[in-house]
Length: 418
Image 1 (cartoon, rainbow, N blue to C red):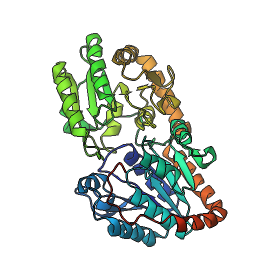
Image 2: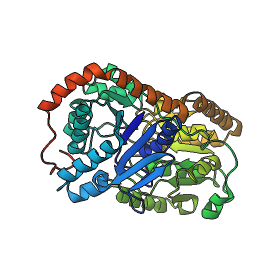
Image 3: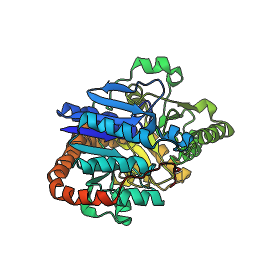
Image 4: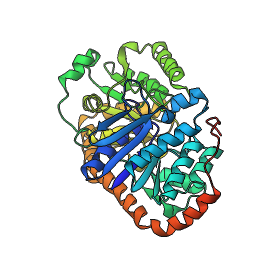
């Protein structure tokens, strides 16, 4: 099968969607399929390259950070050419778009038109939902053959705006359980980050640095943890290259660093950017407790699977899809959003009982092996493709009639919130 994927970012751009793609693409290739991804440009990354058998094509016309700065000006013909060339070169059996139910109407309409004209099923993975007219238009008015929701929370959000349940497949993410697993920590980690040597009672917040991810709550909770465990150490990651189309990251990081200094925690907190495949697995192995206290509704939270696969308990908030995976006293804890005292209480409880902490970590690892490996995830994605292809013939005929009434926009000189 020839599979065309489209998403706004790919490593070295980091984020949940980007991380999940680095697991999914090679796995589909390993299963015998031809996979290509059209994505945004990235500094010091070539426009065309091979990623474990998948072909990656970069374009500035898929770079949201660049598109925002350019004001979406003068891109009509260029976007059309980039998308059509990518799809014509591959001639896919299925087109799979990630988060193209938001950000820019013009890109999505072009993809839709190509899919319908060429009688190719069009799949959307909804990694997020939003609350504005553009989200409503692109979620409900684009002719998606199937929509993959990454959690039952996302499924409910989609249904609330009128998407029919029978069009949605709920597929929780998968993880590379051989990359993220219990084991020895590489000496290279300590060479690159000597601040981590001989640290005890390590709490790890793997989310990117931002207020939406509850990093301020983690810092506030850690101050209380230090009262109980003076040698405790907090590790925070994810302050690097992200799709920051609303330009908030630097502001958030500045506040969080000021908060660390204000609470006199500078010597007990280490903040840095870490590579996904080389350093992050070691950081999980090094840590005792993982925290992911999102302050907003978290669609899924891939860090949950990374922690569980690494055999470590995780404390999350009652946010979005996370309570679907994490259960109290089984593989971690769920606490209320923006409650630093309860977060601290759960961290202290886990740090105080080595056996209980290990039992929760072992249970999480077993769950991943049975339900959330990348192999299981890729197989479920492939089932959605196959079902969409089988069911396409009758739908495709009606769709071709629809497209004649719904032509792609002639102008794309519109801002992000159109």
